[in-house]
Length: 79
Image (tube, rainbow, N blue to C red; front, side, top):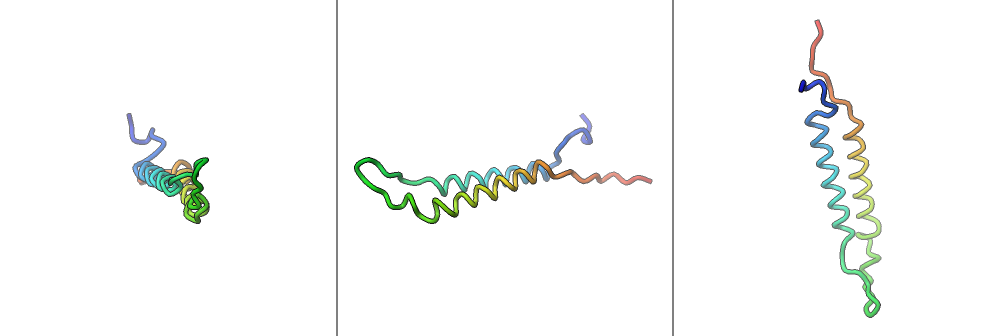
């Protein structure tokens, strides 16, 4: 298969991997102990869980969209 036939180049895959890692980090920031019927956990409404983590996930998703839309540059020189 010729390299010209591929839709993505190496940079696209790297950007996709970085975007996925950022999304995973965002979901990890959202995780934590939850409240149960017997005990209330006030950390469920922390700034990290309701503001920072969703913003990190949004940045990750936007960077993944950019990685998919980005067009690889042609390095072929025409004479």
